[in-house]
Amino acid sequence: MSIPYFEFLRAELAPGLLDGLWVSLIVIIPSALLGAFIGLTAGVLRVYGPMPVRKLAEAYVSLFRGTPLVVQVFFWYFALPYIKFGGWSLVLDPIPAAILAFGLCSGAYQSEYIRGGLNSIKRGQIRAALALGMTTRQAVMNVVLPQAFRRALPGCGNEIIYLIKYSSLASIITVNELTGTATTIAKNSWRNIEVFCTLGVVYLLLVTVATWLLHLLEDTLSVPGFERPQE
Amino acid sequence: MSQHSENTPILEARNLIKVLGGNRVLDSVNLDIGRGRVKVLIGPSGAGKSTLLQCLNFLTPPDSGHILLEGREVNAGSKKELCSFRQQVGMIFQDFNLFDHLSALENVRVALMKVRGMSKLDATERAVAELKRVGLVDRAAHYPANLSGGQKQRVAIARALAMDPKVMLLDEPTSALDPELIGEVLTVIRALAQGGMTMIMATHQISFSASLADEFIFMEKGRIVEHGSPAELLGKGVGSRTQAFCAKISELTGEADGEFRS
Ligand SMILES: Nc1ncnc2c1ncn2[C@@H]1O[C@H](COP(=O)(O)OP(=O)(O)OP(=O)(O)O)[C@@H](O)[C@H]1O
Ligand SMILES: [Mg+2]
Image 1 (tube, rainbow over the protein chains, first blue to last red):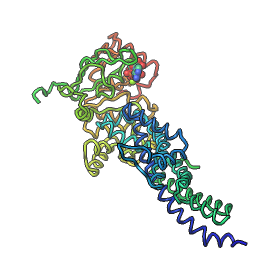
Image 2 (image 1 turned 60 degrees about the vertical axis):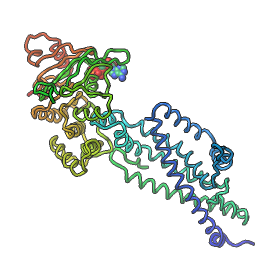
Image 3 (image 1 turned 120 degrees about the horizontal axis):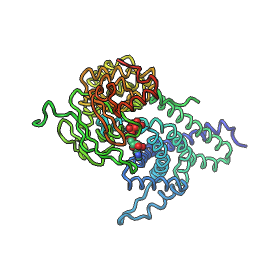
Image 4 (image 1 turned 90 degrees about the horizontal axis):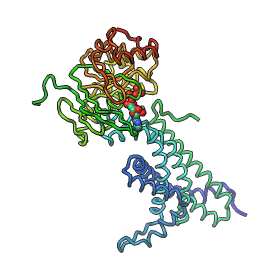
């Protein structure tokens, strides 16, 4: 009664998913960059910030790690417009709302890895840097962060892999990314199994490429004593 | 410049007091060192030698007291003054504290570029010269993970020397080393002393330091209890506390300090 899978794939599914993939990338890449930036900032503040700032950064992390991502996504899209800032309210389009939600959530997790990396650097190296006449800031920028970043990279990379997968949640606020597109195609074609299995393969490819890129970055930054553990 | 005469000590500490965990780790310590002199700090574990050295460059800020560099009091409250003071006071640590993500060359170069604002080219040239001085040019590209302890300590010395310090503080520079690696570091330190570097060194290498030091400073419980030339304190039949202490370490460590008898 219906056309064979490969015919369906070529004519309908692949073009649809390709559009979705494009939208997914538009969500994932800025979210990952935003998350890395927020994670780095929050991680540094949690270790070196003055006490009140430290507490604030801790509160941010607890809040975003402690609530379901779905709730966060809904919040930025549906609830934000109801919050008035002196008569103004902020209404976000679906894609910016998704990027904000994912970036903030990812940043909270990333900051954990950054913090761990920072704490793993022996205090002695900071003292040596200070003894050479560096300011605390210079010591952090030139000695601590480059090492902490290398130590944190595998964890942060994992977080980006998660981000690729949870970006599918953007579909619940009408973003037509991979999952959203696939759902529509499945509904219209009644070919759920084929569509969602294909979707799974696409995510797998996406994750494989991302893993490869992250390993490339790790290897580029690798110096003796900071090698990527060989699996 | 007026107070900067030939006899002004390079570094002077007045009345340093430091309390840590309820203990007076430094109890009114006074110390001064003239140009080209070598002073050696000895004393039992916990005497406050490391704390004293770290107070001298404010890595551990003293609770009270004054530090003077060439007769001028250092105002550690000013960040700029503190950084410029620290550039002039080199420090060598027991566990080297090399920057693990940088090669030997980069370890020596980084502060030249970031602190002294030298160009990469000039800094590299200077770093190579310093590595040559400690006999490690051929290891310039090696990372700390691939250097022996003795090599790491020599890189650390090169790194400190590159800043043109007026005085060097050395905190047990050979204590973390395997016995067979101590000699290479002591050779570098001896060459420095002979080259006229002003140094304050905490060490347990008694006979080595006796051959270099102008003065031994014996500390106990946060106080300087004896000081004087090695001959004064360690001569036959002097009966000083220092002598008793040195006899005890030599006994405990066997020949460890006899390794480098000159
Ligand atoms: N952060 C700290 N808190 C509390 N007590 C401290 C701290 N740091 C050092 N101390 C104490 O200060 C005293 C002096 O320590 P210090 O490291 O200066 O001795 P030292 O003479 O260098 O000894 P060693 O020969 O073992 O290196 C010790 O009793 C030590 O336990
Ligand atoms: Mg000590």
